[in-house]
Amino acid sequence: MTITETYLKGCFEIEPTVFGDDRGTFFESFNEKEFIDKTNLSIHFVQDNQSTSERGVVRGLHFQTGNFAQAKLVRVIQGKVLDVAVDLRRNSSTFGQHFSCILTGKNNKQLFVPRGFAHGFSVLEDDTIFAYKCDNYYNKASESGIVYNDPQLNIDWMLDEQEIVLSEKDKVLELLNVLG
Image (tube, rainbow, N blue to C red; front, side, top):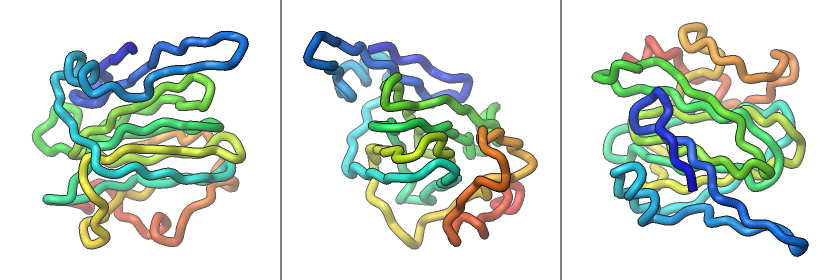
């Protein structure tokens, strides 16, 4: 397993070692000991989530506040997404910057998104299955987010504007500079 820190401190790209033969493939999607050894982070995941989406769906940019902040380990089981993490840590030299990467059911890459970040993704193929682990339980009262098309972030979601599909909740999220 290769674990590489992105230019956003604490945010890691993870590429598993995939073993294949005439039966198919096998890989470890998570190994706590190896994760700790390569990141110096001890994370205890308490919840697994999964969504299915069609091309054009944008989910996010979401985060939990206060005591319900969450770190996430995200991956695609089937399909393709552009995955995005935004640094919201006010004391960080990369505050307001984002990192994005392509996650697919074929490349098996993962992204570890630490607490203090917003997270979102755009779906680039139909029938995409997205899965993620969280280190804290979801709390509706603590959910927040940044609108996907915030001009300060200037994220290229790799979709034409007219094909983007948002939830009603995501349509009314705030701009980064309003979150104060």
